[in-house]
Image (cartoon, rainbow, N blue to C red; front, side, top):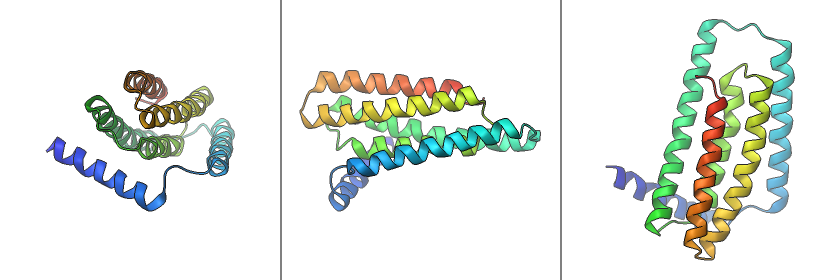
Length: 166
């Protein structure tokens, strides 16, 4: 069942690649980064102004954060299997999807501490850079570098996970 799911994901990524082309324009990426930073800075300001949430809201936000994180881990696991098997497709699609999901976490988590939000922002920027290297190494068929960079990518994901509410 997992292999069927992995094959389906790879086919979807390949299909998406052929329709949309390989990668985003640099201006689009920079605009997205600025929008993400602005949204999270606004979230930080809102969090410091309003500190009163009920326990029910906290439970719902933790549950939503957990669901998002499960999706992130599934995509990363699938990407890792593709890398380790030597049959990875274009890696910018799963990396972009992971980053997109991580961008949803501050809103889903509710009142995160400002330090946690800053960590998420900085680690997301690290993921973006690491994702670029993953794609570069994949296109250049540099397998050992690709595996090493994926390990760094996974470590950065774990650092983000450690600041999420439990």
